Image 1 (tube, rainbow, N blue to C red):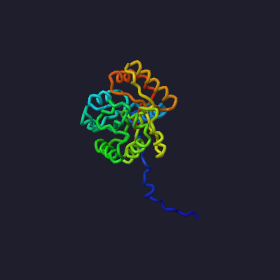
Image 2 (tube, helix red, strand yellow):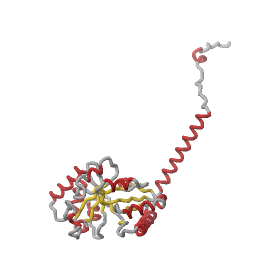
Image 3 (cartoon, rainbow, N blue to C red):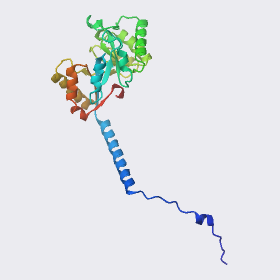
Image 4 (tube, helix red, strand yellow):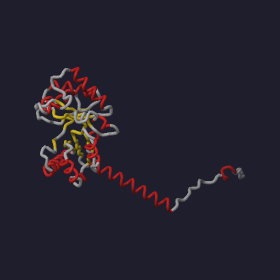
Length: 262
């Protein structure tokens, strides 16, 4: 005896899902997007492998200086003076910037260099130092990095450096040692507080000639190729800006980044 099973009309009536065939235009667009994404991933991977180069430009106190840096076809980090006799509103230059530093005047061995407005001396009291750093924080609410202007006498004083370092950290700053003296104690202080020691490797424009500056830049690039990164400091001199522009092709093999991207 053969049993008869009733047919399930509902199941029979259900049609298999229909997949709309892509048009030739859609296929082409898909290929273009896929190719672009692949190229972007390759470019990102290559960029990540390139040695990293940080160029800090100190002594920024005027808008025209900042504009000169912004016209460069690669990344440089401006280090802006707090308000001073050259510009009592220099802090306003940082408005709208995402990548910048504060260039803090510290005591040097030169009386002339110490004439900078509100230079911090090594023998200043802890309270006076806190007051100055808190003022810097109010003036630059979005700043994360500070480096020293001059400061050869200050940074070789361990107790003064320790006092400043901890005050900066408490106010949300990271200190980058400009290395204005080989006797700087900032590395020792950073180690004491178990912080990463951030420093400049050298200045590129101690000699104000385009050829000499380009030679220093090449020295920095060789160090970056060997070690994986380099931090160099320059100033907004016409010769420095010209040397940087002329080094544009040399920079193509390197990943120029801001200090906060290191």
